[in-house]
Amino acid sequence: MTTAAQSQRVAVVGAAGWAGSRHARAFTKVGANVTHLVEKDERAVSLAHELGAQVVPSVQELRSDQLDLVVVALPTTLQPDVCADLLTRGFRVLTEKPVAADAESAAIMAAASGVNQRLMVGYTLHQHPAVPLVSQWIKDNDVIAVNVRSVAYKETIGSWRADPKEGGVAVVNGIHAIELVSSWFEGDPRVLATNASSSLYGSPVPEHVVSTLEFPSGAVFSLQSYWSPWQEPQGLNQGDWSLTIDVLATGGRMLWSNDSLHVWTRDGGQHEKNFAPSDLFLRQAEAALRFCAGETPAVTFTQALRATEIADAVRTAAAPGAREALTP
Image (cartoon, rainbow, N blue to C red; front, side, top):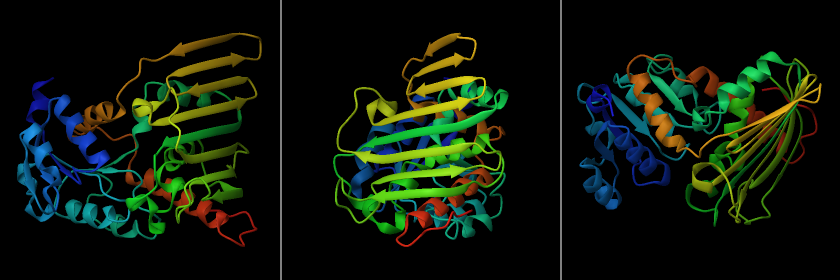
Protein backbone atom coordinates (compact mmCIF):
# COMPACT_ATOMS: atom_id res chain seq x y z
CA MET A 1 0.00 0.00 0.00
CA THR A 2 1.50 3.32 -1.08
CA THR A 3 0.89 6.83 0.17
CA ALA A 4 -0.31 7.75 -3.34
CA ALA A 5 -2.87 4.93 -3.27
CA GLN A 6 -4.09 5.95 0.17
CA SER A 7 -4.78 9.46 -1.09
CA GLN A 8 -6.95 8.32 -4.00
CA ARG A 9 -10.68 8.77 -3.33
CA VAL A 10 -12.97 6.42 -5.23
CA ALA A 11 -16.74 6.11 -5.72
CA VAL A 12 -18.43 3.00 -7.14
CA VAL A 13 -21.70 3.24 -9.07
CA GLY A 14 -23.72 0.02 -8.97
CA ALA A 15 -21.80 -1.18 -5.93
CA ALA A 16 -24.33 -3.82 -4.91
CA GLY A 17 -23.88 -5.82 -8.11
CA TRP A 18 -21.39 -8.64 -8.63
CA ALA A 19 -18.89 -6.50 -10.53
CA GLY A 20 -19.48 -3.36 -8.45
CA SER A 21 -18.78 -5.10 -5.15
CA ARG A 22 -15.63 -6.69 -6.63
CA HIS A 23 -14.42 -3.26 -7.73
CA ALA A 24 -15.14 -1.68 -4.33
CA ARG A 25 -13.29 -4.37 -2.38
CA ALA A 26 -10.39 -4.41 -4.87
CA PHE A 27 -9.78 -0.67 -4.57
CA THR A 28 -9.88 -0.96 -0.79
CA LYS A 29 -7.35 -3.80 -0.87
CA VAL A 30 -4.89 -1.79 -2.96
CA GLY A 31 -5.10 1.07 -0.49
CA ALA A 32 -7.51 3.53 -2.09
CA ASN A 33 -10.18 5.23 -0.01
CA VAL A 34 -13.61 4.11 -1.26
CA THR A 35 -15.69 6.99 0.01
CA HIS A 36 -19.02 6.64 -1.83
CA LEU A 37 -21.22 3.78 -3.05
CA VAL A 38 -24.03 4.75 -5.41
CA GLU A 39 -27.21 2.65 -5.14
CA LYS A 40 -30.89 3.60 -5.21
CA ASP A 41 -31.91 1.15 -2.48
CA GLU A 42 -30.47 -0.41 0.68
CA ARG A 43 -28.54 -3.22 -1.01
CA ALA A 44 -25.17 -1.50 -0.59
CA VAL A 45 -25.55 -0.65 3.11
CA SER A 46 -23.70 -3.70 4.46
CA LEU A 47 -20.85 -3.19 1.97
CA ALA A 48 -20.66 0.48 2.95
CA HIS A 49 -20.29 -0.51 6.61
CA GLU A 50 -17.57 -3.00 5.64
CA LEU A 51 -15.58 -0.40 3.69
CA GLY A 52 -16.39 2.70 5.72
CA ALA A 53 -18.11 4.33 2.76
CA GLN A 54 -21.20 6.48 2.38
CA VAL A 55 -24.21 5.33 0.34
CA VAL A 56 -25.76 7.93 -1.97
CA PRO A 57 -28.77 7.39 -4.27
CA SER A 58 -27.48 9.10 -7.40
CA VAL A 59 -24.32 10.18 -9.20
CA GLN A 60 -25.66 13.72 -8.90
CA GLU A 61 -24.63 13.52 -5.22
CA LEU A 62 -20.97 13.14 -6.25
CA ARG A 63 -18.63 16.11 -6.53
CA SER A 64 -15.55 16.07 -8.74
CA ASP A 65 -13.47 18.03 -6.21
CA GLN A 66 -14.05 15.28 -3.63
CA LEU A 67 -13.15 12.27 -5.80
CA ASP A 68 -10.21 11.11 -7.91
CA LEU A 69 -12.08 8.32 -9.72
CA VAL A 70 -15.64 7.09 -10.26
CA VAL A 71 -16.12 3.43 -11.16
CA VAL A 72 -19.27 2.67 -13.16
CA ALA A 73 -20.46 -0.95 -12.92
CA LEU A 74 -23.99 -0.97 -14.29
CA PRO A 75 -25.85 -2.97 -16.94
CA THR A 76 -24.33 -2.07 -20.29
CA THR A 77 -27.37 -0.18 -21.55
CA LEU A 78 -27.26 2.20 -18.57
CA GLN A 79 -23.57 3.03 -18.61
CA PRO A 80 -23.24 5.47 -21.55
CA ASP A 81 -25.57 8.12 -20.09
CA VAL A 82 -24.02 7.88 -16.64
CA CYS A 83 -20.44 7.97 -17.95
CA ALA A 84 -21.15 10.87 -20.31
CA ASP A 85 -22.62 12.89 -17.45
CA LEU A 86 -19.66 12.17 -15.17
CA LEU A 87 -17.11 13.02 -17.86
CA THR A 88 -18.90 16.26 -18.72
CA ARG A 89 -18.81 17.22 -15.04
CA GLY A 90 -15.04 16.71 -14.92
CA PHE A 91 -14.68 13.29 -13.29
CA ARG A 92 -12.09 10.68 -14.17
CA VAL A 93 -14.02 7.45 -14.91
CA LEU A 94 -13.37 3.71 -15.00
CA THR A 95 -16.31 2.00 -16.70
CA GLU A 96 -17.06 -1.69 -16.94
CA LYS A 97 -16.69 -3.18 -20.40
CA PRO A 98 -18.06 -2.91 -23.01
CA VAL A 99 -18.22 0.82 -23.59
CA ALA A 100 -21.87 0.39 -24.72
CA ALA A 101 -24.23 -2.36 -25.83
CA ASP A 102 -23.81 -1.19 -29.43
CA ALA A 103 -22.02 1.52 -31.38
CA GLU A 104 -25.16 3.65 -31.66
CA SER A 105 -25.49 3.76 -27.87
CA ALA A 106 -21.84 4.77 -27.55
CA ALA A 107 -22.46 8.00 -29.47
CA ILE A 108 -23.41 9.91 -26.32
CA MET A 109 -20.05 9.03 -24.76
CA ALA A 110 -18.17 9.97 -27.91
CA ALA A 111 -19.60 13.47 -27.55
CA ALA A 112 -18.68 13.83 -23.86
CA SER A 113 -15.84 16.16 -22.95
CA GLY A 114 -12.66 14.41 -21.86
CA VAL A 115 -13.67 11.00 -23.20
CA ASN A 116 -10.21 10.46 -24.68
CA GLN A 117 -8.34 11.73 -21.62
CA ARG A 118 -10.40 10.83 -18.55
CA LEU A 119 -12.02 7.48 -19.45
CA MET A 120 -10.58 4.03 -18.80
CA VAL A 121 -12.57 1.02 -20.06
CA GLY A 122 -12.32 -1.96 -17.75
CA TYR A 123 -11.25 -4.88 -19.90
CA THR A 124 -9.71 -6.93 -17.09
CA LEU A 125 -8.09 -9.40 -19.48
CA HIS A 126 -5.37 -6.82 -20.15
CA GLN A 127 -4.33 -7.13 -16.51
CA HIS A 128 -3.34 -10.79 -16.83
CA PRO A 129 0.46 -11.21 -16.73
CA ALA A 130 0.34 -13.41 -19.86
CA VAL A 131 -0.96 -10.59 -22.07
CA PRO A 132 2.37 -8.75 -22.63
CA LEU A 133 4.05 -12.03 -23.60
CA VAL A 134 1.27 -13.10 -25.96
CA SER A 135 1.05 -9.63 -27.52
CA GLN A 136 4.80 -9.49 -28.18
CA TRP A 137 4.84 -13.01 -29.64
CA ILE A 138 2.04 -12.11 -32.05
CA LYS A 139 3.88 -8.91 -33.02
CA ASP A 140 7.02 -10.93 -33.79
CA ASN A 141 5.29 -13.66 -35.82
CA ASP A 142 3.28 -14.01 -39.01
CA VAL A 143 -0.07 -15.09 -37.58
CA ILE A 144 -2.31 -17.41 -39.58
CA ALA A 145 -5.17 -17.88 -37.14
CA VAL A 146 -6.35 -17.12 -33.61
CA ASN A 147 -8.86 -19.49 -32.03
CA VAL A 148 -10.60 -18.41 -28.80
CA ARG A 149 -12.88 -20.31 -26.43
CA SER A 150 -14.38 -18.10 -23.72
CA VAL A 151 -16.77 -19.69 -21.22
CA ALA A 152 -18.40 -17.92 -18.27
CA TYR A 153 -20.04 -19.95 -15.52
CA LYS A 154 -23.63 -18.93 -14.79
CA GLU A 155 -26.21 -21.01 -12.89
CA THR A 156 -29.03 -19.16 -14.61
CA ILE A 157 -29.41 -16.38 -17.17
CA GLY A 158 -31.68 -13.74 -15.73
CA SER A 159 -31.82 -10.13 -14.60
CA TRP A 160 -30.10 -7.69 -16.99
CA ARG A 161 -28.22 -10.46 -18.84
CA ALA A 162 -31.54 -11.75 -20.18
CA ASP A 163 -32.43 -8.36 -21.68
CA PRO A 164 -32.09 -8.52 -25.49
CA LYS A 165 -30.92 -4.90 -25.48
CA GLU A 166 -27.78 -6.03 -23.60
CA GLY A 167 -26.71 -8.12 -26.60
CA GLY A 168 -26.31 -11.59 -25.13
CA VAL A 169 -23.10 -13.52 -24.51
CA ALA A 170 -21.07 -12.02 -27.37
CA VAL A 171 -21.39 -8.55 -25.86
CA VAL A 172 -21.31 -9.50 -22.18
CA ASN A 173 -18.50 -12.10 -22.29
CA GLY A 174 -17.15 -12.64 -25.81
CA ILE A 175 -16.36 -8.92 -26.09
CA HIS A 176 -13.27 -9.53 -23.90
CA ALA A 177 -11.72 -11.68 -26.62
CA ILE A 178 -13.01 -9.46 -29.43
CA GLU A 179 -11.31 -6.43 -27.88
CA LEU A 180 -8.02 -8.17 -27.10
CA VAL A 181 -7.66 -9.93 -30.45
CA SER A 182 -8.61 -6.78 -32.38
CA SER A 183 -5.87 -4.90 -30.50
CA TRP A 184 -3.32 -7.22 -32.15
CA PHE A 185 -4.35 -6.53 -35.77
CA GLU A 186 -4.97 -3.45 -37.87
CA GLY A 187 -8.10 -2.74 -39.85
CA ASP A 188 -11.70 -3.87 -39.62
CA PRO A 189 -12.27 -7.63 -39.86
CA ARG A 190 -14.92 -9.19 -42.11
CA VAL A 191 -17.41 -11.47 -40.40
CA LEU A 192 -17.34 -14.63 -42.51
CA ALA A 193 -19.88 -16.69 -40.58
CA THR A 194 -21.74 -16.59 -37.28
CA ASN A 195 -24.12 -18.90 -35.46
CA ALA A 196 -26.00 -18.18 -32.24
CA SER A 197 -28.12 -20.35 -29.97
CA SER A 198 -30.31 -19.90 -26.89
CA SER A 199 -30.77 -23.59 -26.17
CA LEU A 200 -28.67 -23.95 -23.01
CA TYR A 201 -30.93 -21.88 -20.75
CA GLY A 202 -33.82 -20.93 -23.01
CA SER A 203 -33.38 -17.21 -22.34
CA PRO A 204 -34.40 -14.52 -24.87
CA VAL A 205 -30.76 -13.70 -25.72
CA PRO A 206 -27.94 -15.53 -27.56
CA GLU A 207 -26.25 -17.78 -24.97
CA HIS A 208 -23.80 -19.53 -27.31
CA VAL A 209 -22.10 -17.77 -30.21
CA VAL A 210 -19.59 -19.11 -32.74
CA SER A 211 -18.13 -16.63 -35.20
CA THR A 212 -15.32 -16.55 -37.77
CA LEU A 213 -13.75 -13.25 -38.84
CA GLU A 214 -10.85 -12.30 -41.09
CA PHE A 215 -8.57 -9.29 -40.63
CA PRO A 216 -7.09 -7.42 -43.62
CA SER A 217 -3.75 -9.13 -42.97
CA GLY A 218 -5.40 -12.48 -43.68
CA ALA A 219 -5.35 -13.64 -40.06
CA VAL A 220 -8.50 -15.59 -39.22
CA PHE A 221 -10.15 -15.11 -35.83
CA SER A 222 -12.47 -17.86 -34.62
CA LEU A 223 -14.50 -17.19 -31.47
CA GLN A 224 -16.62 -19.50 -29.39
CA SER A 225 -18.27 -17.76 -26.45
CA TYR A 226 -20.97 -19.14 -24.18
CA TRP A 227 -22.43 -19.13 -20.71
CA SER A 228 -22.13 -22.51 -19.05
CA PRO A 229 -24.15 -24.10 -16.22
CA TRP A 230 -21.09 -26.22 -15.40
CA GLN A 231 -18.21 -24.67 -13.49
CA GLU A 232 -14.86 -25.77 -14.85
CA PRO A 233 -12.05 -26.96 -12.55
CA GLN A 234 -9.74 -24.11 -13.57
CA GLY A 235 -10.31 -20.60 -14.76
CA LEU A 236 -9.96 -16.88 -14.27
CA ASN A 237 -11.84 -14.85 -11.66
CA GLN A 238 -11.74 -17.69 -9.13
CA GLY A 239 -12.95 -20.24 -11.67
CA ASP A 240 -15.89 -18.24 -13.01
CA TRP A 241 -14.35 -17.76 -16.46
CA SER A 242 -12.42 -20.25 -18.57
CA LEU A 243 -10.38 -18.78 -21.43
CA THR A 244 -8.25 -20.45 -24.09
CA ILE A 245 -6.48 -18.56 -26.88
CA ASP A 246 -4.68 -20.72 -29.46
CA VAL A 247 -2.47 -18.78 -31.92
CA LEU A 248 -1.10 -20.44 -35.05
CA ALA A 249 1.75 -18.71 -36.93
CA THR A 250 4.16 -19.66 -39.70
CA GLY A 251 6.96 -19.88 -37.15
CA GLY A 252 5.19 -21.71 -34.36
CA ARG A 253 2.19 -21.99 -32.08
CA MET A 254 1.25 -20.34 -28.79
CA LEU A 255 -1.45 -21.68 -26.48
CA TRP A 256 -2.66 -19.53 -23.61
CA SER A 257 -5.07 -21.36 -21.33
CA ASN A 258 -6.15 -19.52 -18.16
CA ASP A 259 -2.93 -19.32 -16.12
CA SER A 260 -0.61 -21.33 -18.38
CA LEU A 261 1.27 -20.42 -21.55
CA HIS A 262 2.82 -22.95 -23.93
CA VAL A 263 4.92 -22.15 -27.01
CA TRP A 264 6.10 -24.45 -29.79
CA THR A 265 8.63 -23.48 -32.49
CA ARG A 266 9.11 -24.96 -35.97
CA ASP A 267 12.52 -26.37 -35.04
CA GLY A 268 10.96 -28.60 -32.39
CA GLY A 269 11.61 -26.41 -29.40
CA GLN A 270 8.96 -25.67 -26.82
CA HIS A 271 8.60 -24.04 -23.45
CA GLU A 272 5.88 -23.51 -20.89
CA LYS A 273 5.22 -20.80 -18.32
CA ASN A 274 2.69 -21.01 -15.50
CA PHE A 275 1.31 -18.04 -13.62
CA ALA A 276 0.01 -17.93 -10.08
CA PRO A 277 -3.75 -17.30 -10.10
CA SER A 278 -4.36 -13.58 -9.74
CA ASP A 279 -7.35 -11.40 -8.99
CA LEU A 280 -7.81 -9.42 -12.20
CA PHE A 281 -10.03 -6.89 -10.42
CA LEU A 282 -7.22 -6.25 -7.97
CA ARG A 283 -4.67 -5.77 -10.75
CA GLN A 284 -7.09 -3.52 -12.59
CA ALA A 285 -7.59 -1.37 -9.49
CA GLU A 286 -3.82 -0.86 -9.34
CA ALA A 287 -3.80 0.10 -13.03
CA ALA A 288 -6.69 2.50 -12.45
CA LEU A 289 -4.77 4.29 -9.71
CA ARG A 290 -1.90 4.74 -12.15
CA PHE A 291 -4.47 6.08 -14.62
CA CYS A 292 -5.48 8.61 -11.95
CA ALA A 293 -1.82 9.64 -11.80
CA GLY A 294 -1.73 10.25 -15.56
CA GLU A 295 -0.87 6.88 -17.10
CA THR A 296 -2.65 6.02 -20.36
CA PRO A 297 -5.04 3.09 -19.78
CA ALA A 298 -4.67 -0.21 -21.63
CA VAL A 299 -8.06 0.31 -23.28
CA THR A 300 -9.15 3.80 -24.26
CA PHE A 301 -12.54 4.84 -25.61
CA THR A 302 -11.29 4.55 -29.20
CA GLN A 303 -10.21 0.92 -28.82
CA ALA A 304 -13.31 0.02 -26.81
CA LEU A 305 -15.55 1.51 -29.48
CA ARG A 306 -13.75 -0.51 -32.16
CA ALA A 307 -14.47 -3.72 -30.22
CA THR A 308 -18.13 -2.73 -29.88
CA GLU A 309 -18.38 -2.09 -33.62
CA ILE A 310 -16.95 -5.55 -34.33
CA ALA A 311 -19.40 -7.10 -31.85
CA ASP A 312 -22.21 -5.28 -33.67
CA ALA A 313 -21.13 -6.93 -36.92
CA VAL A 314 -21.04 -10.36 -35.23
CA ARG A 315 -24.56 -9.85 -33.86
CA THR A 316 -25.85 -8.68 -37.24
CA ALA A 317 -24.35 -11.71 -38.98
CA ALA A 318 -26.08 -14.00 -36.46
CA ALA A 319 -29.49 -12.48 -37.13
CA PRO A 320 -31.99 -14.58 -39.11
CA GLY A 321 -31.54 -14.09 -42.84
CA ALA A 322 -27.98 -12.74 -42.66
CA ARG A 323 -25.99 -14.31 -45.50
CA GLU A 324 -23.30 -11.94 -46.62
CA ALA A 325 -19.99 -11.28 -44.89
CA LEU A 326 -20.25 -8.02 -42.97
CA THR A 327 -17.69 -5.38 -42.11
CA PRO A 328 -18.13 -3.17 -39.03
